Length: 126
Image 1 (tube, rainbow, N blue to C red):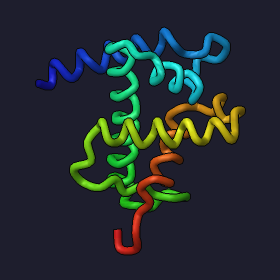
Image 2: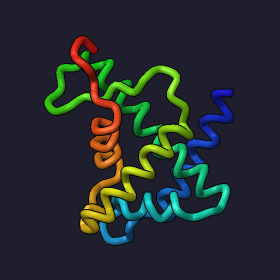
Image 3: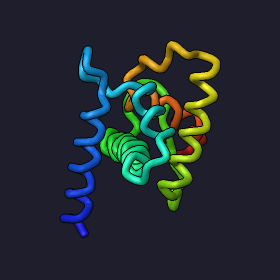
Image 4: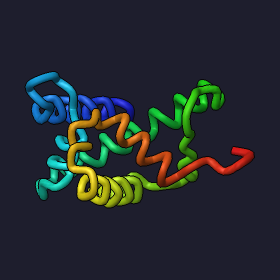
């Protein structure tokens, strides 16, 4: 299973790098939105794994740091599925970019982190 996951991750990273902004190499929120809006199965898989991977990375980082980082924390409920995360992020991303179209230039992983904090803030005691 780990080999399949690693292979899938490599495929996702290749697709992401192919869609990254040529000017500075960053995968922007606008790039992510474009990938997530493409109806193709491969790009939908890339969208889902990118969002889920970033959210997992944040959760792991917060566990490792034991909450000692500056800024808000995200507490994604246990058992939250990647399709549920994808749906929530895509909805909030669309809302954000409708109101603040220039945010499409933001670096995607940091923007997803901020969206996750907004969607799943930690409660006192977490």
